[in-house]
Image 1 (cartoon, rainbow, N blue to C red):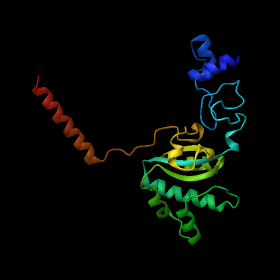
Image 2: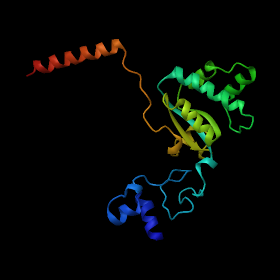
Image 3: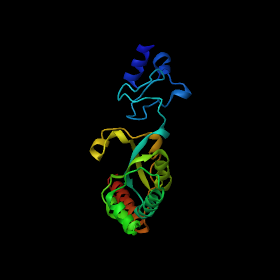
Image 4: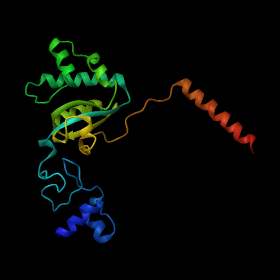
Length: 205
């Protein structure tokens, strides 16, 4: 059994695929370590890659939240400011917020303008040591307007370290962020360009 588990881990497949040549309906998405996101099997009690206990629930961990891409800057600014205000209103919070946000909060001027400068060059770390429920709240507010990635707190403290780790799938954006439609001018330009290309192609026939 230990040999089977090791083969599954090396090839990144389930035991069904290894033995039967196909995946069962329940095995199509491999189980992953909640820490480093390495593929694990039901026989593992600790992650063979990072040593993390696989009995630990996502709800018990703390996370670093990164905004990777923004599709609607205004909505993100407004909702992120709302998110920070909600976090600060919780007297029991243990998350670490950016220094600029804390300064504006202490001065009583925390608003969408407070987060504008920090979002100029994503990816940006939004919060660290955040609880499961805090990250869930951020996803609910921002997920339709930005691409968010969550990492275990022990994955690192800066973007370079985080870039070497896999995000926690269940606490990250699941679908492509909503993209703004083409403006009227851009649509007209695209139609004209298409007509020009068509005429040029026909001229060679």
